Image (cartoon, rainbow, N blue to C red; front, side, top):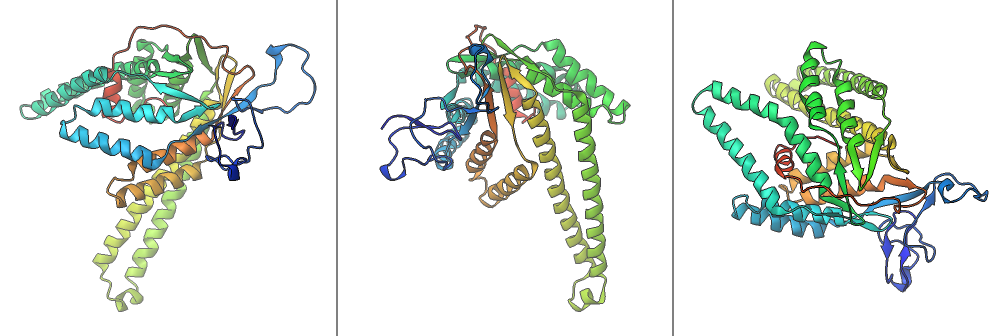
Length: 405
């Protein structure tokens, strides 16, 4: 059978079963016949004939898709974990490359895959450098708090350099259609964002925090490039202040709800009904505290996912790459449910469902992303850049630092 491309998710399929040739095996949408290899959907539907040449064509919405499978990724993940443990962490560099290669290869735009090109030996060097830093920190704790403080201060001063190197390394080793990405931000910009602005947070009583969040996102989105094409970012500070203000109001409302719930539970414990049930005040207070703690975790997760959904959608929607724009439609309630159930699944499976959780989250994110382009990806050309050190990439991954998306 000829190649069939789903108009909904962009997956290119070969040799569908005869009983199910009109249904996409990924998203379940009706395919409806043979399509070109790039599935596109008009963003602005207009039946008028275009008489101004190819540069005036209406943008086409190209769906993204993630087609990874939890069971398949689990096999890669469990082998990587085993080899990393028995080699005392040395195999971790190869494990990272294998994991990322799988995730990249199963991320599709118009049925075309991404690729991860990093050299594991480069990542191993970064891992060894970080291990040396950790050992130095532990040794200083055995001698004097002054030395420990000096190491912490040194890490604080080096941290922007690690962020800068990490973004360059990750971009350079990511490719699409055999064209590498690049990060064009400067080290001086990174130091201003990660050293100078945080110093103003206590001086402004936290009022500058939304501006700091804006500058971090702007640094990432504005300095990315695909081949020779640089990205642009038109986001505004005002959106971040409005979003964080709404999140603060939501947090206050949730805290009031938690306090009222705790007060009701404590009053019930001390009521005659509670006494008849032989519930002691001490046990009731412990139960109330556990309930309050659980509610605060749920509330924190909800607020975190609200901020993530709103800011991620805004940043992608305000970014362009040449003539290409983006659409992101994440919803906070969906992200909250995915995050909450993923945490429960990982806890009750003792971590064995971590691969399933990652695949599930990735599938949702890319199902809610689209690329809008009038001329596809033919306008992009490759560029050359010296190989980037893996030190920054390893450092930020080791400390699980959020530096970009």
